[in-house]
Length: 353
Image (cartoon, rainbow, N blue to C red):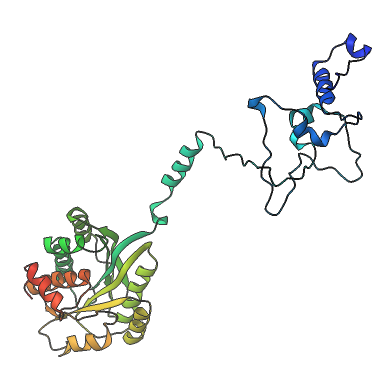
């Protein structure tokens, strides 16, 4: 048993509690020869249970515990136990780890308000920065060139508004893989204009909101025909949004094959198809001398492209509204008018072809 070291006369006259505690601890770590060994402080004494400090895990590939302070090679060792080393005895000197020793990694703790702060940051992120998953990205590319007067332009918008809110169309949307589609309405001429921006439609309420937004805006696209530029504009609308659609489709409608401005139609079509976008076409048939006799065939040869691409001709008037509705159902379902599934689908939804 080690004998306690008595304080000298000076310390007896002016007792120092910290120095006395240090001297007492120092007496416990002395060896039989009286040589102090501060490197063995971990095993020389035991702290109270609530103050026991377990050495942290070393870095990967290291078998030496970290030290509290680095000591230069020229700095002599200090055997005197200071107040700091008394509080942190395990960090006084590097200690080699034996195979039987276990290390302790202290758990990471956060302030109680930190979780609320992180949650607030997530909720404050703009919606546009979050990618939206949906079944279909659909660009409705409607003709607004000089051959379409104001009444016809309004009728086209009303036809699309009526079709998108048809119960059969909404039912087709609800039965998709994701239960929703993303739609934008664009009018084309020599220029292009987005009438209704990207809208996620998943039920009758969202479909009605899209239809209401379609009727109000004034005419913006004007001039002659630029079909190639219109197709590329539709491609840019798909590639620049924050939507990740399982399928991507441009629904093109027009009453001509004229292309007075912009890139050639077939060149633009090939670029769109190469981007993984399908182009469907709705040629509007008129009883006029200037219209091409076989406009549907011209659209099939020069405009449509991609998986399940098809042409669905329609005459202006009530037939146009019904054609838009049937075309939307087939595009939402991802099929073509010639397939058996399309026939069964249209019959089930009571849509006459």
